Length: 86
Image 1 (cartoon, rainbow, N blue to C red):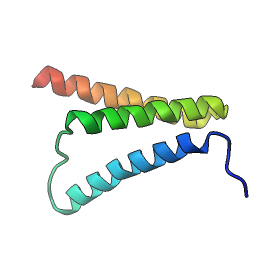
Image 2 (tube, rainbow, N blue to C red):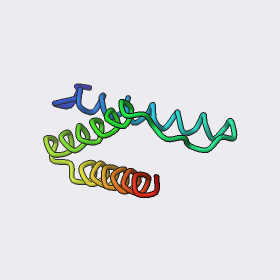
Image 3 (cartoon, rainbow, N blue to C red):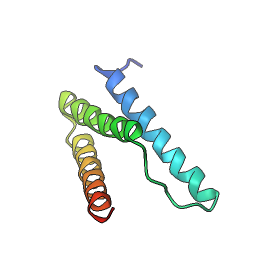
């Protein structure tokens, strides 16, 4: 089995988004709500979403591209809502 072209983009996406998923699960298991992120993790999440978009575009994978686009749109709306209220 050979690695796909631009596999490092996919690895970046999987690692960073996986860490955020694990963080949410750990907080939920402790009975805490999801807490706001500091600026560096926000930038890392946005960068992983953009890397996912780039990977989906380069591999011509419309489903992966669409999924990452939805993630970025959801992330943008959550940040906008948080900034409007706070």
